[in-house]
Length: 325
Image (cartoon, rainbow, N blue to C red; front, side, top):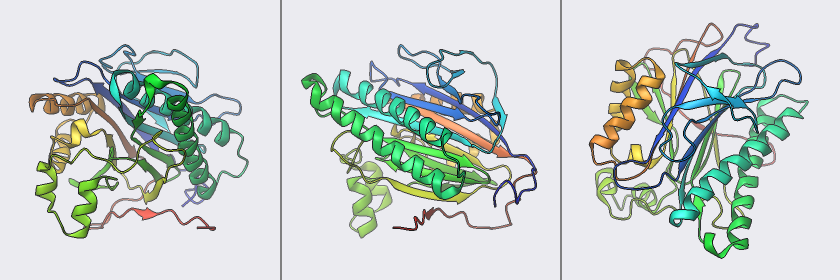
């Protein structure tokens, strides 16, 4: 359903992000980004980034995209979804002290610029064009990180997961590389929207391992692809229709590895303000040892432009049907 079909009825997005180094690692190699595209002609996208770029990333701050340093923002970041949409990103770096942080930061930065440049110049604001720009931006981010690693021996072998959720009209488009996750919380129920691109997920899918065995496996962090590891990457691109009150939550495995899916719904019901929700989930992960960097980005969709979820309505992600696929 496009904005024309919505009859101009607004959709409001509340969003926030939080990243933390955890209790074990000295450096935070995670990063996140939230982009809002205003409706006005010539208005730049606005970016919500970790407020502390040096390390612990407490809170977030708004700035113009892509170069503005921004200003501190207190409380919920809330805006009306415009015709150009919005985009959320989470990335989890790997590859040593220098490499992991560089891979996640550079990957997100390059995707940011590539997507904004392409989408701003796009005249056909259709779902198909939006999905193509998102996919191409992830591929450009992969090429950039790969070239950096090849050019600098100190960065050899670096890589990063990347999970993006793009809002356009009443749909969310999900692009994934690696095992950072996207969840939907709808009317007290949780659905994992992404599929981990990992060794243990392959074993679970084949029936060789149970979900519980996968959670305990020493190989659970072995992923099958990441940004920058190779010259090309296969982007898993899916979509979902958004309903009134839906919460989309992106996170690195520093959260999903120690917090149960059902707890996400419990915390969403308890902490309606998204800054408080993100903080509480980070604290929960840290209370369980915080073995890895922890990042969570949350977005709640509301407003008369969204349909209500039907009782017992299943929430399913669908692969995006490119015409030339």
